[in-house]
Amino acid sequence: MSTLYSVVYVSTAVRPFSQDDLAALLTKSRERNRAAGITGMLLYKDGCFIQAFEGEHDAATKLRERIRQDRRHQNIVMIFEGWIASRDFSDWSMGFKHLDYADVESYPDLGEMLDTLMRHGRFSMEPELAFKLLHSFTEQVAQ
Ligand code: FAD
Image (cartoon, rainbow, N blue to C red; front, side, top):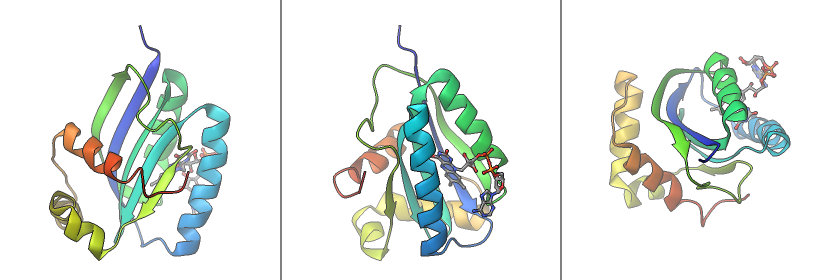
C-alpha cells in the first residue's frame, strides 16, 4: 500500500501578495519542501491561491496544519485530501504560476471558480477538475 498522501485546497490572501511576497513565500517553501520530500504546484491569481502538495503522510499532514494556521490567507477550502498511488508533481518542489488574464481566458473553469471564491469566500468543484487545472500548468512553470 502507498504511503503517499496528497492535499489540494484553495484560499484567499488576507491582503494581495506582491511579487516580492510571492518570491519570498516560494523560496522558503521550496527549501522546506525539498527537505521534507514534498512536491506540488501553487497557482495565484488576484488574491486567490490553489495549491496541491504531496509527500509522505506525516510530512504532508504537518504541512497542511502549518498552512491552515498561516494568517496570511483565509477561507481555506479543502478540495481533496487522501492517499495517492504515485506523485502527480514529482519534478516540482513547488511549481508556481502567477496567472494572468490570458490564462483565465484559456481556462474558463478557472475564471468561474476563482470568481466564486473571491466573491463568496467559498468554493465548490470536482477534485478531478482541480487536478486537471493544476496539471495543465506543469509544462509552463519553473521547478
Ligand atoms: P513560521 O515561519 O514560524 O511563521 C509563523 C506564522 O508567521 C505564519 O503562520 C504566518 O502567519 C506568519 N508569517 C510567516 N512568514 C511571514 C512573512 N514573510 N510575512 C508575514 N507573515 C509571515 N510552507 C511550506 O513549507 N511549503 C509550502 O508548500 C507552503 N505553501 C504555502 C502556500 C500558501 C498559500 C501560504 C500562505 C503559505 C505556504 N507555506 C508553505 C508557508 C506555511 O504556511 C508556513 O508559514 C511555513 O511552512 C513555515 O511554518 P512555521 O510553522 O515555521 O511558520
